Image (tube, rainbow, N blue to C red; front, side, top):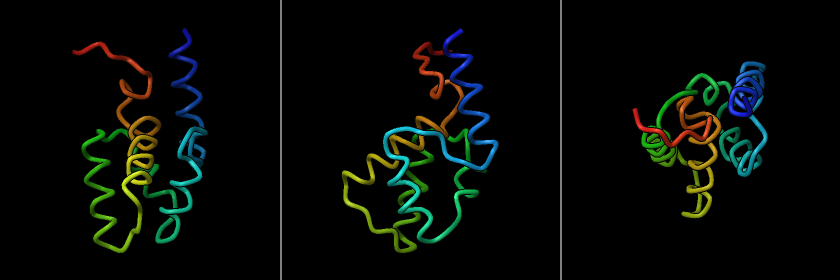
Length: 95
């Protein structure tokens, strides 16, 4: 039941146009909103960690300046809170 409650909480936060609370949220807001709104991130919810890595690499091509540590924290946050539902629930069961 705990995972279901977490999923509902995360879904409601993202649906409301806000990023879920978590480690890296402030960094994501600061770095990403320098060029665009959070709506871009929220609309991309559900993509894989690899896809988030690719997005961050693309944003670097557009001028995003991050250290390696910041990049990892951003990708960690995005994949944990806006990644596929299975990853957000913390499931490690393969399909």
